[in-house]
Image (cartoon, rainbow, N blue to C red):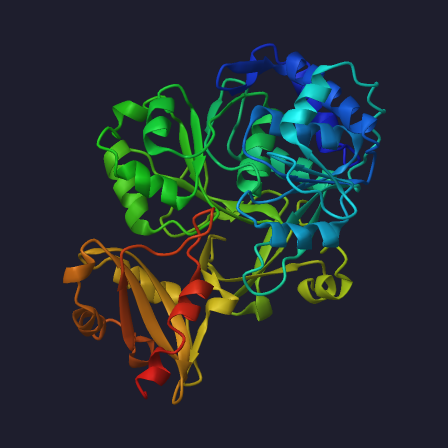
Amino acid sequence: MTDMTASFWTRVSGRLSEARSVVLSAGDRTLNGPELLAEVERWAGMLAGLGIGKGDRVAVQAGKSLDLVLLYLAALRIGAIYLPLNTGYTDQEITYFVGNADPVLLVRDDAREPLAGVQVRAISDLATFAAGTPPPAPAHDATADDLAAIVYTSGTTGVSKGAMISHGNLLANAEALVATWELAPADRLLHALPLFHIHGLFVALNTMLLAGGRTDLIPEFNPKAVLAGLSQATLFMGVPTYYTRLLAESGLDAESVSGVRAFICGSAPLTPQTFEAFEARTGHRILERYGMSECGIIASNPLRGERIAGSVGRPLPGFDARIANGEAIGVLEVRGPSVFGGYWRMPEKTRQEFRDDGYFVTGDVATIDPHGVIRIVGRDKDMIISGGLNVYPKEIEERINDLPGVVESAVIGLPHADFGEAVAAVVHARSPEDFDGAALIATLRGELAGFKLPKAVFVVPELPRNTMGKVQKAALRARYSSHFSAEGR
């Protein structure tokens, strides 16, 4: 039975103490369980030597490395609160996070200019300090309810919000995923994801540490390097873009991935076209799952059983999901042991996002079929209201993506004097110069109601994405916002 008072680190350290085989590698550096524990103790002592203790915030904007993992685990070890920050953030953006979270320490690839009120250290300097003889680390006394991390949302609809993640949240989600995906010491994960996002940090790394398996860190996703590394792997986790880029590699076939038992995908919607193409090339049906920074992973397609293209599966054991107001299609609400405790220093926003019975309002529009299978239709903010009628972009995108010459599409709403919002399609075409937008509309005319038909088609060589592969619809809406007013429509 799970100890509901245990912290993630308490459980993981117990697992690692018994793991005599390699559990973490990066380049030529490899560590087994006891070696990893010893390194974490040194890093924990180093943090204590800098005056950092339980409840202090440690903000980190540094590239992926084994040292970064040690820093993360050391923060958990002493009860500090870890703030992973995207390596692409500008100094201006970092200033906001520092001002909001008040970290005691900001760790970067290089120290650069100091920021007011916080000491800034280069991670290489911390590694040198930790390799010396630091003072003993204080006893770990964090409990399940104590904060382990603050994860900032992307802020595409406004100011970034810090989701407060507890030690219990981390442990509950890792345990659920280890059980659902049957992770074991014999597994070997090829880790190509960034460590500033929950996908790479909590979903991939935490679960493998808890399972006692091996994690091979590679600096970044490179399709050729990944294809070579898959010959030794049993697991791979990625975003949809990783899979589309692997499909462009001529060497990808069933033999090249014969040792892999599961390909897992998340962080952005996987198109049925990519799902089917990957199966045709490799024999593997990609296992898609669903989660958020605020909740961890909530639902997953099964490891054993039918994986349905376009669905994210059923809720994990111990988790509940429903559609708001009991409707057939609407905003997904979830409840479970990994759902966060609220937004850092935003009590009013926290109250707005939770129902009285504890369900969190995700903002994702979804359907749940009679068997409990969840399908994400889109974001609530992406829903288009045209002439007073609701239009769900994913329904249109799925039809466009099936058309010849289309790689992928994004359907957005643009300001329109008559309809309020008009439907527009942005199409990533294989041959943009030859793609006929008028023909696309004509083809859809027999498949979709008139109010759903795109009133404009923009053809592009590539769709804009964030670092985790999500299409940036806000950027597209801004780019084409004046289209209908400019045309006098």
